[in-house]
Each structure stands twice: as structure tokens, then as C-alpha cells.
Image (cartoon, rainbow, N blue to C red):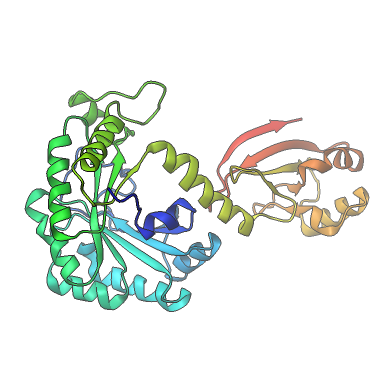
Length: 346
């Protein structure tokens, strides 16, 4: 069996894929669907965590992570074909033809006409999550000149239909099968429990038996001499590799001069509350930096204007220069929302 992953996956593992969610609309009701209430069934667009109101926001988020490609997802993007074509052309036009674009679809609404439109727009790779009756849409995509394959959850107890899918994909010359570890989330937990699924020991999200199902399919394909590339993507890889690498790419581009980034992409700094009547303006920042004997870039103003910010390593200098100030050591993710997950005050 060939051990090779799709180019889209290679880029994703480097954290270099923009996730472009073009719609939450989908006419399937998969019980394991992980979409949040903010997205499921909602006809909205997100670039990573950014809800898109202007097209420029897509480009800005792609630049923030130094994106080498884009994964177009949903919902079913095919249901918003005009929107998909617009964004793909825009991304290819701005970043160049080497900007790799893959698209997910259940295949239900894929036609030869829609494939032609996607090809002309510049989509490079198609990933199908099809019901059995829609398997032929993958062959149709191959005939249209796409790199195409399937991406499916590894559901415990469903090794047989997955093996049948491998045989079909191998027979049509498909390019890959991606197997994803099945996951619990707040949106699907009730449905999953109703079907008897349980958490893997020691995990907060991974479904027990999913990894074993994927491994059994890979082992069977190898022993059967299949040349179908099969890639298994675990929950831990998504969190510990893909997400971390994307945060690091974003962090180095959006970190303020006084923020430091660790190996997880997390930003650290001090917040400085000068107290009632304190000067939290740019002028106040310059004044504090001058008192500390530090360069002007070492002290900034938080976008809210409620306090100043400085490097964590300059705590002693801040204390001496502004003994009345309340200091907090802050850690933030470098997303558009700057989610804080740790604050120590003194």
C-alpha cells in the first residue's frame, strides 16, 4: 500500500491552510456533525475564526497565517457555488496559482457542470464525504481532471463499508482516502451517546474504537495489496500539530512588539492598570517607557484603551517606574478574538 497523503493534508499539517467556511447550509443530517449552533444551518462565511463581512477579511486572515492554501468547507459548499467560485478566484488571483485549494462536499449536488465551474475557478482537490449512491461522483471528478478522493469518519463497527469504499476508490483510480478519528463534541454528544459510543480512555473528545477501526482498514488494505493511499488523521494530530502550527504562524505575524510567543503559539505579556486617573493613552505608554529606561516600543496601549501592556520580562522595571500600578501576567491565543486562558494578577 502506498503511504502518501494528499497535498492539501501536507499543507494543513504545517498549519498553512486557511479554513474557509462558506456556508453552514447542508441537506444531510449526519448524527456526528460537529458544527456549532453558530454555524450549523446558518448561511454565513468564516475565515478560520473570523466571521466574514467583507471579502478583504478573507485575504487578511490568509495573510495573517502566511497561508499556502485554502480548505473550502461547510455545510456543503456546492450549495453556494457562486460564492465558492468568487472566493477561489480571489484567493488564486491574490496569492497566485500555487495557492492550493481543496474543497469538501458530500457530493449529493455535484454535477458535470458544477465540476467544470470549480475547475475553471482553480480548485485543485476534491474531498467527498458521500453516501454510497453518490460514490460515482468521485469517478466523475476524476474524469474532470481533479485530484479527488474520499474523507470519512472512522466509525466503530463500520469497517466493512469502509473496506468496500477502498475497493471502489482503488477501482476508479481515486487519489486517496482520509480517515478521521470520530469525535465527541457538545453539538453531537447526545446523538453519539444514544448510539452507544463512549470516550476513549484518557481523552476528552476521541471516540473509543475509532482508531482501531481505521487501523484495521489500513492493515486490510496493505495485506490485500491495495495501492490506495490511506491517511488516518487522529484528534491529537489536529490539536497538537495542525492547530498549534497555525497558531504559531499567526502569532509571529500578529504579535505586538512587547509580546513573546512560546512553542504552542501562545502570546505572553504584562497588562498595566495605572489606576483611577491613570494615563492609558499613547502618551502614557511613552511616559512609562521613559521612566523604565526602555525603548518606546516596549510599552503599548491595549485596543480597549483600559490599560497599558509591556513585556513580561520587564515586570521589575514596571514595578519601579509605576509602584501604584496593578500588574497582570496574561497569556492569549493569537486569534482575532485574543482568547485569554491564563491571568495572574499582582
